[in-house]
Length: 591
Image (cartoon, rainbow, N blue to C red; front, side, top):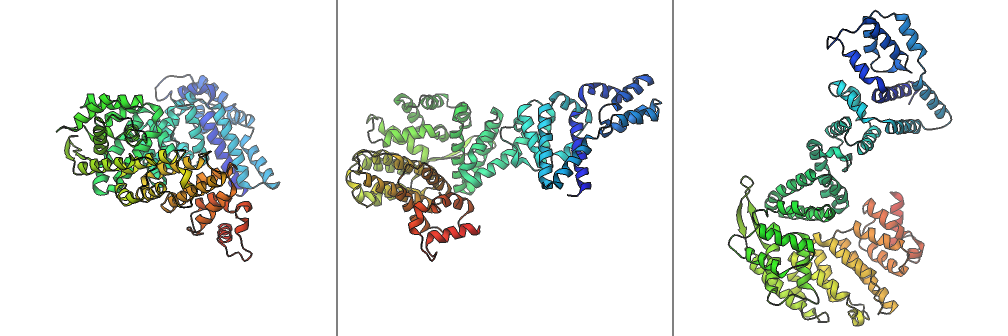
């Protein structure tokens, strides 16, 4: 950056600063004076001259964007040039030029030009945020009669866009700032607009930001959900608009690409899970098309609100869904309700009365196997497909008979049948819940812990991880629960062996595509320094055996703290550097 460019930059910055905040208290008078001709108001020439001269005497008024407007009016009122020159020259202090001079000094002293510019712009940003007056900003904005030229230039500068985001969070009702957010979104910067910005309540802005945020959820998965949830819960209108948009996509994706439709439903469920504290259940019930079935809708809402199933409400739902005109299946697909059904049926100590158990099984099977088609034009249901309902009911009954035999039952002989049954997602969910309760039983590892053979229940977990990518988070949560359980009744060496066994299951999850969440957890567990180092050595050895050094940058960053720890991998490294640890570290240095 040469000196001329620097002068231009800071003169422009100073001009923008004056334009946004330099009108001060006399702004209304300025507008009245300038617009007097348009209103055909007779203003005495002497008043105009005095008013303009007073403005000329303001500090550095010669740099104000409205200077020419005032000069024209001054001379039109027979103002004397020498008085104007005297007022403008005597009031000139050259603040922008001082900034340029100080910047030059800093550069001469060795500072990088970009660092100097960032420092000055940062200070200017602080001053604008500190002294910003939303009422004056709105008046200036209104007086422009359109998009001011300086605003178009401002939104192309990343630092000033960040300043606008900070200002709009403080001054939520400022029309000028909210309109600027709209200009930013139209300019293609919607990806960086914070989800919490109130301006996303503008439908045009929300549509662009929602599109970008939803794309990040599809690409990045659960990592992008928190920001997406913030965007949706900015207000009731944004939540409703987002859910309607996603609901409208489900039929299309389910018909043209079933796996995409399933993933979209999964995203919607994750969003609903993340916004539990916002009391969105009434809106969700409406979106589930439950308005025409108020009795059944009330039954579902009551059980979800209370967090427990009620036999009377289950009876109401069973009768309705067993009729010729059942309520929409979406009314049963609330995660809390499904989880309660699964917990009731797959508990190691079930408390469901025998006469009610078939009704619970029927509702769980109906929810997971029945498909509906709705007309987008009339919003009427055109088809209810129950082809898979009977098979699902029989499958659930069969797997419940297996699990009812007790946690100590040897299910090795039943393993082929279990593998076939867990292909159904709802049965896989039930088995995960049952396995979680079974493995946590204090007596479970009293015998199996003595052996290095993987218990059959954990083999089933591996199979579910292979079959159901959408259940990876639940499986990881289950394995974390196992890994962190104390198992105080077991010997220390056996507990270490079990922790290695649970990490083996996590490595299998990595092989199934659940890479980043697993590595994030293992890195955090290592950081706690409360687990024997041999456990993490086992993890590193087994993991390096299945991955390549060319894995993603994010994966390397998460794995490097473990691999580079000499306490963990020191004994694994060979002098010739041909071992997996040394190869991985060398590849990490290259990148």
